[in-house]
Amino acid sequence: MVKILIFAIMAVGWNIMSGYGGMFSFGHAAFFGIGAYSVAYLLSAHGLNPWFGMLFGAMLAAIVGTVFAFLCLRYKLEGSYFALATFAFAQMFFLLTENLEFLNRTEGINIPILQDDSWLMMQFHPTSYNYYWIGLFLLVAAVAVSIWFVHSRPGRFTTAIRDDEVAAESLGIAVLRHRLITVALSCAITAIAGGFYTQYYMFVGPNQGFGMQVSVDAIVPAVIGGVGTIWGPLIGAVVVGGLSETIADLVRNPPAGLEFLQGLSGLDVAIYAILLIIIVVFLPKGIYGTIRERLRK
Amino acid sequence: MSILKLEGLSKSFGGLKALRDVSIEVSELEFLGIIGPNGAGKTTLFSNIAGQLTPTSGRVVFDDTDITGWSADRVAKAGLVRTFQLMRPFESMTVLDNVAIASHQKIRSSRQARNHAADVIERVGLGEYMEKMSGTLPTAGLKRLELARALALEPKVLLLDEVLAGLVPTERAPIIELLREIHQGGVTTLFVEHIMAAVMALSERLLVMHEGTPLMIGDPQEVVNDPTVIEAYLGEDY
Image 1: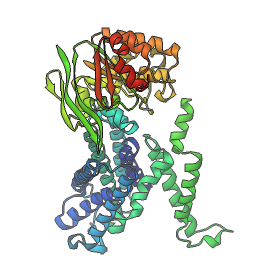
Image 2: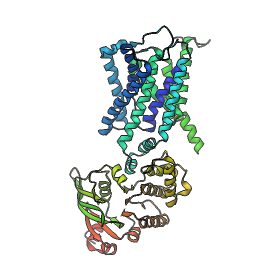
Image 3: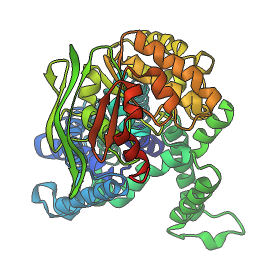
Image 4: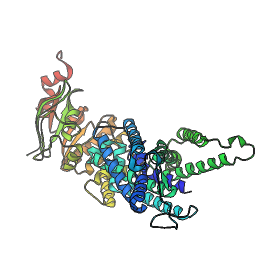
């Protein structure tokens, strides 16, 4: 359940930049990882509480994302080239982390375990519902921020820029500035998902933080649910998260007649792939996006 | 008094000189028609004035301010607004939201911006389409939408690039009337157009562009009857 919430927060973050902003990111792992490692490092090395770590991570991700996007957009790196650059950017962080002593290289960072539950240190007994409540709170906050953003003046300008950059500019919209605002917000939300991930799993390594899989995890729920819609990423996260848990169960305890599935790793990835193809072919705007379009007609 | 002054404006793309030494003055509240064969540099001229392109040399002076090399958004905010020959609606938005984007430039409050936009939409005759998705408009509607967005910025100078292209004759007349109203409402207008009936009906002065440079400027009747202008359009043999 908490995993679904983390998926959802990431997808909501990704959707702001890539859905509403039209800048396709294939490297949101960079910002997820910055959030995850900020919490882990500040806590393990300096004893700072994870709430602060998440906030710090969000700010750092926003700054890093903005600088990155500025360089890309300044030199007119757009469309698929921009997507490729984001991918390379995330890989760069992955390799960097694997080689940085203070981030414990490939070993990753474990969160020191406390004796008792603590809200301040965001640490509870693994079966505690508190993780669920915190995740839900963060998700509600992320959705609220994205609703507010989409209806705000900069948000509307951002959508206009996505629809037609030249027209937007000729109507007085400062294109670069609004794109950077969008990127900063998106990166910050994704970093918060990363910070929460670290606290929930009590561990982060290069793969969990900056791995390519993480970037994919941010994209898939939004694409399945509906890119550029508020509720699409949430619906997508429920579908993807639910599916991934069901498959995990299935592989662990297959029902009678399906024993051959026992311990079959990679089944989830195969099913995601099939699902993605089905969605792209039959519901090109995602589940929610397609339904909304039908209703409007 | 001149509101827009071009001084020796030139633009080259590599070896191609798209604009060569264009110097003209446009008076406040004037309606200036601009004609010329395809490739004469009419659209390039607009792009260099409105900031989509940066001139290679020369100056653009708008309202006593040198705006040469300003970005397009800054030029638009200053009150010099252009429309595009190919319509560029924000397709994910309704007609109202399209125009509200422009109204938002001067109005912060979202409710007031929408009210302002609604007024402009009524003015250009798109009232019944207000809540429709902009992509569903027919061509004539998109042309009006393009005008509405430009007007919502409350421009001092409008650069209109072939607003009538793609319309059938019956659709043209009401738009020509609308352009006349806009101009009489106090907007200096530069009007690039191929439909000569419209150009002659609206223009107070007429500029002929040829191979990137002004061939002639003056009274519309005199200009279209001038032998050099006819030659530029039809070739020497005529």
